[in-house]
Length: 271
Image (cartoon, rainbow, N blue to C red; front, side):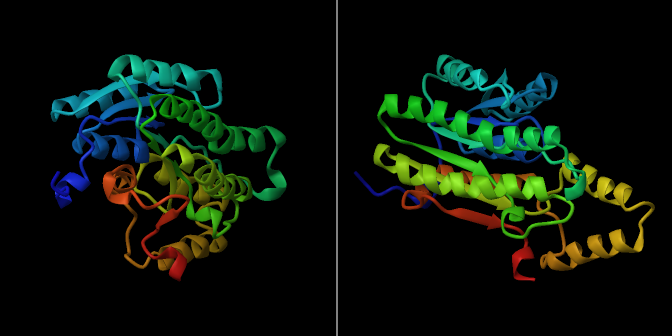
């Protein structure tokens, strides 16, 4: 058999992927890129209206996609999602744990309820959805890929996001631990750590920072300016740029990579 071409190394024809939180923002960027590369994509989201819109957009360009309502805080939904995906597409090869939650609250004001919700969505849900997906991949006996969305906040703790940074630090550790345990089954586990991304959620975050600091207080203005100065490429990432990295980690091109976190930050961590 001839060695695969560069183009074939980045194709996902015949593969089946789940993307949690796949209806909007980063998740939508990932679903579109994976579908364009030939994967059958299951868009899992709590917002079925937006999920259906994303599916329609993918199908309109010739891609294959379906949607299932799933809440990552409901652990029972994990196995239901996997079952629905296998029923729809026949198998499961790729899980992208994209669903996430971030509410900007200073450390001293974080409540137990907010802490629990942040960890439930960003870390606990990721753990058990990965478990459900891995069980199916092991049953199939052909390996698979699990890709977790972390954050540069795991490495550069940011005020006022202590609870969020803690959850994303957990994602990094979980990714490495899962990679060690699942590699014997041919399942490669990696993560992507974005910084600022041009999504509705990202814009809401900026607006919330301004709200907390009042009408552009000097402190808040300095904070936003400091972040902007750290982005060496002088712009936010587009969701599809995160999708491109997810494609690499899901494709044959990354067959020798596991337990790694790919930082996609426009140079923020260099500043």
